[in-house]
Length: 163
Image (cartoon, rainbow, N blue to C red; front, top):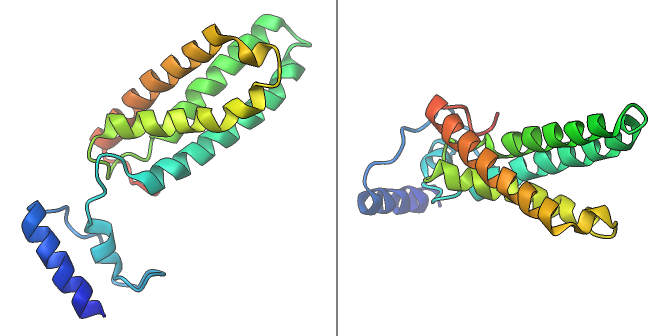
């Protein structure tokens, strides 16, 4: 079975041109494919598994930050608003940072940040303030900008995809 995978990999490599250098490690993955082969396969424009992992982390940050915002309203409404803005920027940046292997890192970052917001949006819609179209549009715009910048910068810095 491994021989078939290696032959398929060589055919894929000849069709696609040279791929990234294999990373260290010769252990087996869950699917039985050698890690070196698995880590050099092209992932396309968006590295979907890492985008989903990043979006999950970004969703968690948005959720926890949103739960803490009502406590900040006791201090000041402005502090709660600033808190939510900072939480959103941090969540979108964390969601987009795993873009090293993506073909188009900016697109990967945008996808991951928007997915994180899409996961939290259904929790906001039942509330009156959560249905404000202006706020939703601004948050989507922030996700696009922060996701693109973070994805591009993370890919240029060469941050590991599993960090």
